[in-house]
Length: 444
Ligand code: SAM
Ligand code: SF4
Ligand code: F3S
Image (cartoon, rainbow, N blue to C red; front, side, top):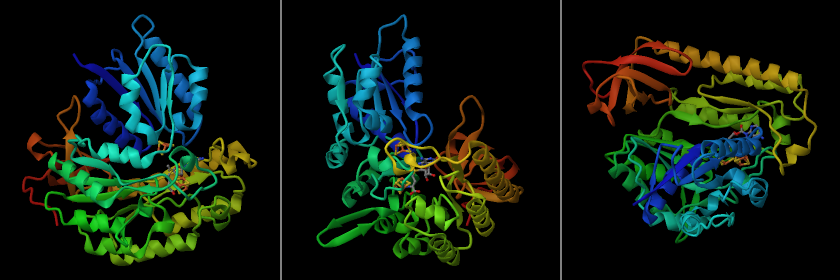
């Protein structure tokens, strides 16, 4: 008789990837994934520490689970991910309902936690042991059977932007061996992946050295581009400083690399970028933009912005607005600065909350307008879509265009995993709506 495990995942795509790898791993010891959080033997929260009251949110979540199981046998409660790494023992002391905590670089020990579970005995695994983690996962097949699959190639960060917890929660930069990644990519493709997104906290810092040769993310892209069964390649999240010419060149020679670059800039002010310890200027960013646009005019940019960083006056905020006039960012994110415990920026004087909120509204409105404009421009046109799945409880299908925008359309089961053309009829900020064209030849 197998046992059940339920994992609730927060945060970035890397957490999503980790969750799936944990599901793959626990099968070895008789655990199976369940979607029913009300009746599980093991309940895992895979947490994110990047913003807001991350820690308090985890305690609220644990409180919610506690209520679910008030009149039932308690499941083994595990807190995993970046909050577990940052808070470690504190969580076990504060909330007795939690049985174990495990940091993101210790997932090779996940099965041991399950096997060693003794009620009332607490377990903690928060070492940075990335090499062993990936060696361990290399032995376990990646069972993802998604059309669009994630593949972590790099973990951690050495850049230490003053606002960010990632270097503390994920540890130092580590790049997986080239062959290990290719092997996993082959598995994913064999299981039906048509799109692979290479993942890393600093994905374009990927650097693996063997026999005096350095392998970069560009080498991985070139390799995957040759694979007949694969249709699309993406990567995220990248840093402007690592946007090297070999990667930029891929946009010319690798047709499967999507013309959509998510490249966070954070601010349009050099003063703020310096205060953030970003290690790049606005000019550096514009140079990358111009180089890529020269290669292919169709390339669109997406970014992350932090609003209200300590030291941001009206002048610096206006510089960010000026940047928005130069680059028409799409599919972008903007966040109010959130002081994170242990980071340098946490000690700086915060700027007025009301002013920050006003600035966020202004920037979000501009980003929203860009998105609406782009989506409107696609109305009545045929766009290429990779069909991912059927929507739950609806006779509609879901896919994405080259810019990662969601497309919802009337389709049929046979189109899943295929590149098709959809005629766009309607749109809102988040999605495009349309129908499959009768003549469904692959779009050029
Ligand atoms: N490595 C990427 C880069 O260099 O830009 C970013 C990865 S981070 C996980 C994702 C985004 O979270 C960042 O681009 C930043 O905009 C946002 N972020 C990180 N720390 C933040 C903080 N303390 N307050 C607000 N937003 C934050
Ligand atoms: Fe965080 Fe990205 Fe800066 Fe690293 S480079 S510290 S992940 S924002
Ligand atoms: Fe969050 Fe950790 Fe990802 S802090 S954004 S889950 S690396």
